[in-house]
Image (cartoon, rainbow, N blue to C red; front, top):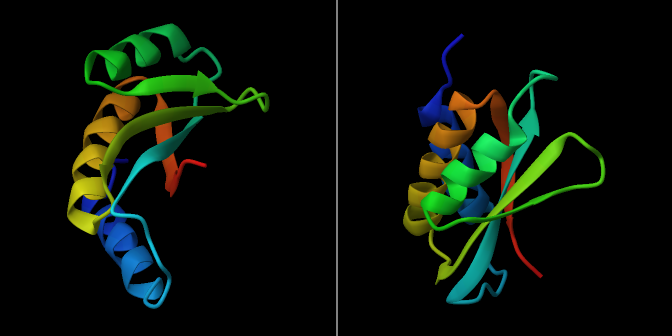
Length: 105
């Protein structure tokens, strides 16, 4: 089954539409979350590929989630979608799937 980037893009833009009235920073570090699909997926290869594109990575203690952080970057739907798509393309090649994004604390 192929990934539907258009649905993912629409979800990102909808997040901004739903946040009307919420004060967002002009710039922030954004965390993109990915979950492992195959137990034998190569975490190290994924992290290396993401780091080569400027992302910082960390694994969550749940053993199933990788966080790829980028920024500080503009907090706009266009800017976030650009990095979200880049990280997703890399993650899918390594048997990880997108699980949203959030502004880092």
